[in-house]
Image (tube, rainbow, N blue to C red; front, side):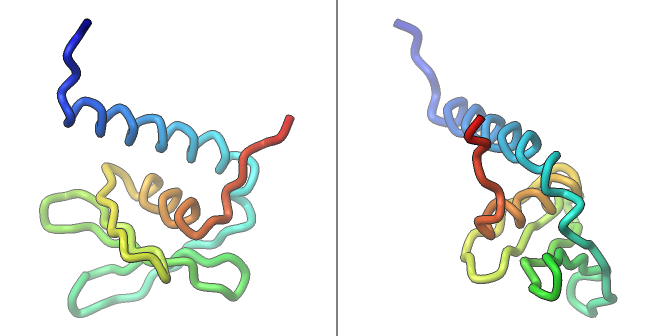
Length: 101
């Protein structure tokens, strides 16, 4: 039996979640809008909207990673790309659903 380190399990789960989010976002992405505002704490703060509803914000941290801040969720996932941050906000907002087909 192969021993799997806890960090490896977490990395695999994160990868699978990102893959799932990417697949689901292909169909729903046009329904969302992204804009930005200047922020004295975060620099450029990007906002993800679904119609007139703010889903969350994201920004680039000093370490180069992107921090997603979904509304009404305490999680603050750190992502490699701004696209991943956007998708994470959409997913944590509950707007991605599995395809029944």
